[in-house]
Length: 168
Image (cartoon, rainbow, N blue to C red; front, side, top):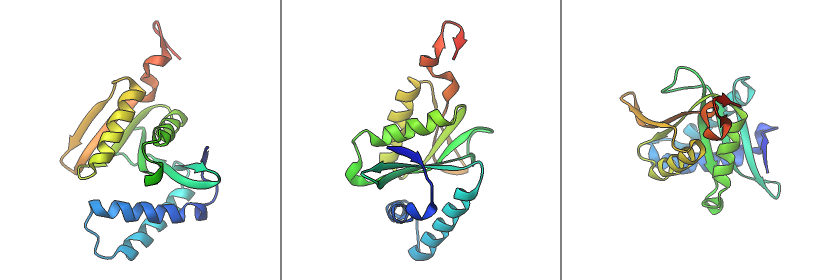
């Protein structure tokens, strides 16, 4: 089941797990301080109007989440996948793809998903998901100010929404 996060306390344990996994891509000298800062940002994002967190639940337990905001690195307008995580034991089950596509469908328009260069598994995942979702209608872009890749696409341009010259 995928739903919008109702209370911030519900996600803190899995968010800490996510931060523990993410630290392998960054130089972190004080994990506890970094973690507390991340949780404070998560709480601020939870309260912000233009930001939303979706959770993936299995038997009432949160096994993944997607955080959508409008903090863009490549586009001038649209939505960004700010944070995304599926617990390792639930990986490669198709649940991550479902959560990503659910998020895209809930926020029609221009999108970007930015991934650090060091996170090769995430780059492969997003390349597959975005390519499938858009039937190849996306741009993969890099930028000097960001050490990573951006996957840029528009949910309004999905071929399944085009019938003749009319976009639904």
